[in-house]
Amino acid sequence: MRIGLMSDLHANRQALSACLEHARTRHVDQWAVLGDLVGYGADPVWVVEQVMAMAEQGAVVIAGNHDHMALKPRDDGQLGSSTAQWTSEQLKADHKAFLRSLPLTAELESALLVHASADKPETWPYVNDARAAARCMSEANAKFAKRLVMVGHVHHQALYYKGQGREWMPFKPTPGVAVPIPRHRDWVVTVGSVGQPRDKDPRAMYAIFEPDSRKIWFHRVPYDHSAAAQAIRKAGLPAFMADRLGVGA
Image 1 (cartoon, rainbow, N blue to C red):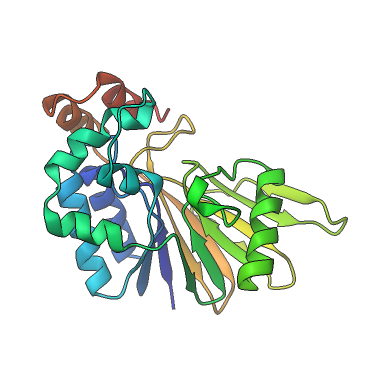
Image 2 (image 1 turned 90 degrees about the vertical axis):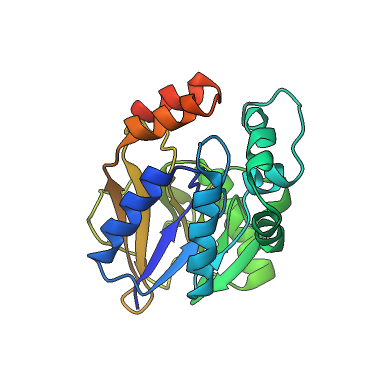
């Protein structure tokens, strides 16, 4: 069994297409989508319909904060809100019904899936350092009896684990290189962003997990980010949303 893990698609048709094509050559058996299907990008309908089709074929899909924002857009001055109203206007009733049906967490094999953190997932905290990973795992242990948590939201790829000295440690993976995640340790994995990487590398991100071997691969996939940026500008969305794709910021 090989499980593909993706998050933060952000209505980026070109990036999602490239990741799905890349995964076809690596024999992914099942998909898990960790939220933020929409927001920022110019193709929310295409992306949501693609994920709806994946769900019909057995993919596990959970909600992200931008999916919630598209259902109830508000003008609060925040960066993410600047595309929420436009996104909401593009989506039809069936798209919104699908987003509304998505849970905040799901369980897959030995892992807990959550967009932000197992620690108060409804408030969308970021797992962006060892302390946040420790809080996430504490809740996963207590509420779900899990020692492995897969998250998105932070738009970069990393692992956090509890070392022998009981301190939480970060680990930066190398793309395409298998990382063992043995059962005797607690692990929090951030799978990265398909549609809007923010680590100064414009390539799309996703991961593949093998529950039997307890290995995970983090992948980076080139895609036509210029076309994705052009679509954002053509839609009349903020130019910053387009410009950032080319620099991974």
